Length: 105
Image 1 (cartoon, rainbow, N blue to C red):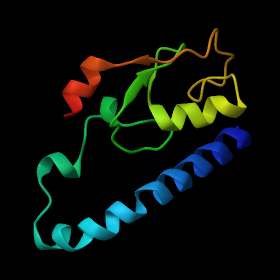
Image 2 (image 1 turned 135 degrees about the vertical axis):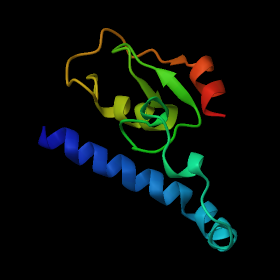
Image 3 (image 1 turned 30 degrees about the vertical axis):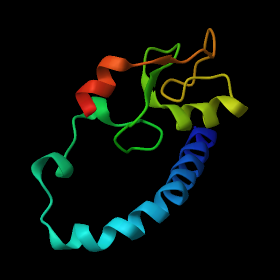
């Protein structure tokens, strides 16, 4: 459980670093406009359980859960277990979740 928590924190930190340049550019425009209802709360199915952010490239793993592609790829680079259950994955193949991606957009 501690390993999962540490991995989730590291993944979130890496994702934050990746998005930092984008946030700096858009922070001034974001401050000028009020947040819409869509930005305030997204459906739980749109949120990656690793990054806890809305997915832009959702994929389905062998555990049946959807994850942000970059986050689950980082996870699987060092582990062969499900981030959600901790159980061993039957395989590490990832499948694009086209329907979920359309719903998010």
